[in-house]
Amino acid sequence: MLNIRYELTTQKKEKPDQTKLGFGKYFTDHMFIMNYTEGKGWYDPRIVPYQDITLSPAATVFHYAQEMFEGLKAYKTPEGHIQLFRPDKNIERMNNTNRRMCIPEVDPADVLQALKAIVAADSDWVPDNPGTSLYIRPFIIAIDAQLGVKVASNYLFIIILSPVGAYYASGINPVKIFIETEYTRAVRGGTGYAKVGGNYAASLIGQKKAEEMGYAQVLWLDGIEHKYVDEVGAMNVFFVIDGEVLTPSLEDGSILPGVTRDSVIALLNNWGYKVSERKIAVAEIIEAHRAGKLDEAFGTGTAAVISPIGELNDDGEIMIINDNKIGPLSQKLYDNLTGVQWGRLEDTFGWIERVK
Ligand SMILES: *Cc1c(COP(=O)(O)O)cnc(C)c1O
Image (cartoon, rainbow, N blue to C red):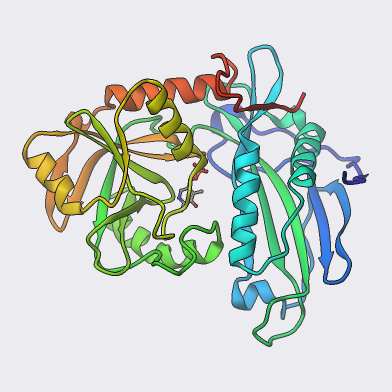
């Protein structure tokens, strides 16, 4: 149990227009912070006004990127309750990332308490327009003021909150994806399975290249042969081929184990679909498309939930999927997941954690 200290703001901010939220542009009145020092453990958990933080220019995180982050959302139900979707999965992944990054672990019960406390403190910021939610960004940074390369002894654990609209301005319309064969996002033995800024820093150049060519995101391939499918942008990827649902397996450690991915697999299994988690060669996707058997493709992630793929570009070969329309399975998954998240459908899997 954390003994959270509250220092509440006396100057609440004006709330942004719910129709113009975008993603991650506005922040709420408060944030959660907790310190760590070796030998002392995590201490001084507090909820304070949202504010800038001061760090030494030598702080480890600036130079060697010893840091981690998470992403989940709080949703407002039609009855006015506020709820989280599978926060236990984010907390479990948080500690998996911490172990990979040599960051001290956090007590799962403490993190859940902190998440609920900060969301409750700023519950008036959870928007209720259709498709909107409160994005929750927990992160840990190493803050030792010294330039030697070593595991830091001091850290900050912070949670900030941002009211967000639908992820894509265009709703859940299909996106165009460029298959990247030059750059690599992650490789076996690396940090692909960990949610860390470094993975994103490495991916920006591919994302930029794709955008310059008119594509929304990159389809990342395995880092060794550039032959097998890993992820699409910051989402896990699924293909529906001849009625069977395929997604890359997690075993190489180059793929981020998404909570949405796990939830999609659970729903599909429950509905009786055949779901295979295995290595998927790009060549297979191309072949299936040529044979008219690539029924649907979509990305999954907390931010966009389900993002249908309307077009894939493989070195100039353009594959249009499902006529550039949302496929029936993508739509069904989107409706069911968002239905449970926003409290419109029954939570048969026990995925919901009520905040208030
Ligand atoms: C966060 C993330 C995902 C999606 O994970 P969810 O838990 O479903 O939000 C997928 N890929 C990468 C690289 C990510 O960082």
